[in-house]
Image (cartoon, rainbow, N blue to C red; front, side, top):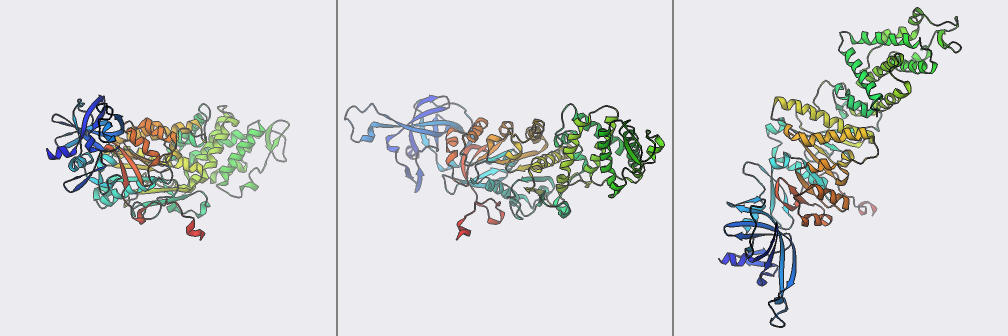
Length: 613
């Protein structure tokens, strides 16, 4: 009873659904209480209280406090001015204590006159115990308003979920991302099952995690570049990927900005042609014969401009055979402008017959042709042959098809710089490393948009296939500065590309959980990211957000974050964040656990005076 009298703060005077009002006893208006040699914080906005309804113990969070005049004191029937004041707390119910365990949700509502108490230390610890009985814990930080109170989160409840880390630049979101995964690797990296069955891919747009020891020293770093000359890029600086990954109709349509009704069907015909030849018993002879047939068709044309354009395509293909082919390419043939046909140079002005066509250097040099090693160069050759065939059979108009082919060709050089298409492996992870960092700091904008999509879709599809054989596989795709590829209002790309990109990542976040695939995204602009993606996240680490649109985007999608937490977002100090989600029973303000210098990301704000003096 002594304990109850000391911890009692008042009684319930109003119940309006989840929101109740508590009248504070006039003797409990001090900021702190001394109890059993311990200093206990008294009631304040943001703290928790317990309401007793018979044998039920309900827990609420104080969201507001205000004062009213106590009308029982008439005129001057009081000794001190504060006796005329009633202190009222506005409390939102968040859960209840059942068998010494805190549970989130509302079991029942209190009644008027129910007594309200401060929480004892044990009760406070129960509320902030987020670790389930069958889970393993990892310490991620301390309560910001309770120094020394560590917060331990269950590994299964946090890392088997989609995670969002949001905050303005300089608020500490990169530090939080690095801290979370460093704690995980520190605890599990030596476990055999973790090495064999867990995989992590980090898309790093700004090179913040590309230091050798950032997060963990046991990782593979791909420092990609499109600014270097192709000849200066080493094989180890490229991502090994099977050529079939890029030979995908949707992806090729995106890369070439193909139109839906004209250029995309052309690409499909080319891929069918490609598969038909590559799967034949003698692919190279099959392709040479196709080329020879196109030479016959071109030399039979009556349209000078189109035929010359197609001869230019042939020149590109045959130059692979002989770099000096330019001097001899059109030996023996000329164009007859009067009758619109090809003729023997210096001969009669008559149209070429089949024997004359087959005697040209254009035709005979095809016998020396061989496929390029690079799959994209090979595909370009197939596209050229398909154009020739389509124009000859009137299935396409040159001006409608050529732009898609030229655009795809313009991107091949950059793709060669970042991908090694000659790999026969379908797995980009090494045998001894399960953490990959893809550093995109030195690549151009096109590759920054394209590569994360290609890699993420590739490993997601492979993981789904492996999941069918084993249930012991785990994949986590981590994307820093996620607004670069998850934005829904980008004006730098076509609608088709944007739809395909968002649909891919929305599929991962909607369906990935059942395949053991999870997404972690960090961004300074949550308002730019698809609301579908944000709404599917399970756990949120919210750092300082100042822009109203960003705060509104978070508020729309996170239903279980209380009003007080939203209002504190613009004033959170650096390194402090609000944790909310399924892994935490209540939203809490955290100071992330300090990370050793060697494991920190390269994201510190510079001090100009360090090099100005």
